[in-house]
Image (cartoon, rainbow, N blue to C red; front, top):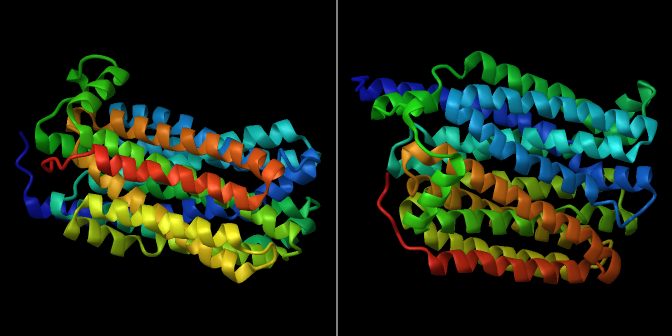
Length: 415
């Protein structure tokens, strides 16, 4: 077993967090710069409101598949290679979104959105990389710091919608493709930051410190996941909480820009509301992480469920043009998501043995994004048939899954 001094591990952890903060900021920009126009671009290219949510849904579905594939790469080769591959795939996807909008091809737009989902998958997997070398008492805060970094680029992203549109126009492209042009640049930079500076690899070092040889793992990946879920109820509870919170957030968020657009809101106002939402998701995450470490994972999950219910109540009762009330609802929607994601991820990580950690984390994010993809697809159908208010009622019912996760879980010792 290695005898690397603890203080050297602490130095590596600080460096790792610095690299992940930088890549998260760029990756967050690459993901959210197009959120404000995704549904509008889809409606414009497809000519159908009921199909408007499919671009964002495909992006979430792509993130689901990519999460598991990237986790498999990380299990064999470490975090760095998995993140680089994810960001590279995301940049290719953003380029295809530009092409799909330019040639007005809905299938190309959907394929681009699927690949762009790999960028989101990389950003979400980064939170686990932050926890690889963290001490148990600071694990939730390490996760939260990386999530917080996303706010730097993510809050800026939607507000670049107007300038990006002008850049696209100057390049001879449709204005709505401009944000995806910006996304290509940001995600390529994120890949370069990780590829050049995430050394040593935090997962590989954690394994070295534990005397664990990944080549000696037995059984299939899914077999290891099933074993962990059967032996560690906290892992299953973490997956349920993360997945439910993400599904609720996506179902409401993906259709809000279209609701505001139909109410006559300008693109810059829509972008501002999306920025406020993203601020709620990420900016408060350090406080959420501190609370999860100080008071426990389950109380923070309960808080997250309550905040989500309040959020959908505000958004669902807002008049179509009431940007302030919708913005407040979207901010709380993000804050509730943060509670579920930070506390749920910490609960999942500490409940999973090191030898199966990447397998279970990949399965968790696959489930998280798969659930959200289904919720996003249903959101378009529900809104088209019953309206935005009923969509929020649908989201409120989903929120009960977070409370179910708390009821079926039990506290487990930190690992």
